[in-house]
Length: 277
Image 1 (tube, helix red, strand yellow):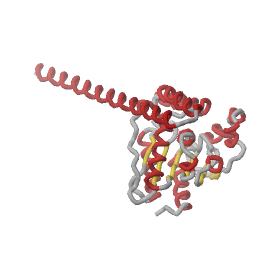
Image 2 (cartoon, helix red, strand yellow):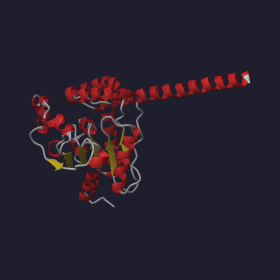
Image 3 (cartoon, helix red, strand yellow):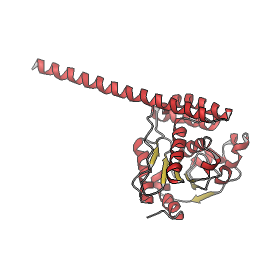
Image 4 (tube, helix red, strand yellow):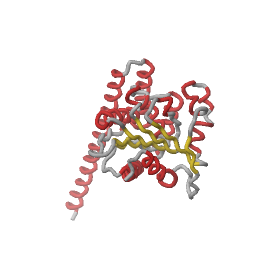
């Protein structure tokens, strides 16, 4: 009996060590992939300011924890449009998948690309990510992944449809910095409960729609009430030249969550573009 207990204990230790080794290897691989992607972008970009934002973005990704997240595959439906989703703050992987799956269902497609904006440090590191986005204007790992996915979608399908919720809008805004004028002209964008209002006209996109639910504090704090928006000329459109689509979905909740307050707006947006099944 004693020998059997010993063998089970040894087996459990070996299994734990194996799992820890695999976990560590995954993180190291993800780190290497994100650093490599950043260096490639820095070589691709000619604007020194953009290169600086990319360099600081890798430091920001280290503090936010995103540098340890693996790049998810960029794949699109074989017959349908190229669709990309970017989830918001304090979201798990399951939340990100739920957003992508809802958008796919409304489009009537079987595949879409999910840019993962994972939560780290029980949400504290997400706050660090907000600071780097909003006050230093960095281009971090999720933004680089988003730009890569947008380019691939355009190459494969000729245009892309991007749906971003909450902090995902700031990630998309950072990704736009990496794209050419021609690439941006082929983007159809929907921002929901946006941390960052993005003007389709100012960015030269095919079209853009920014939706806010009345009582949702995130668009207010991120745009209208943010004093620093007055200090940076490129940010003035977030306060002055806005064309919000306002809704008033009054159901229990914080008035910001995707499922409760913004999900149906995706269906409306897709119908407006003639893609809903």
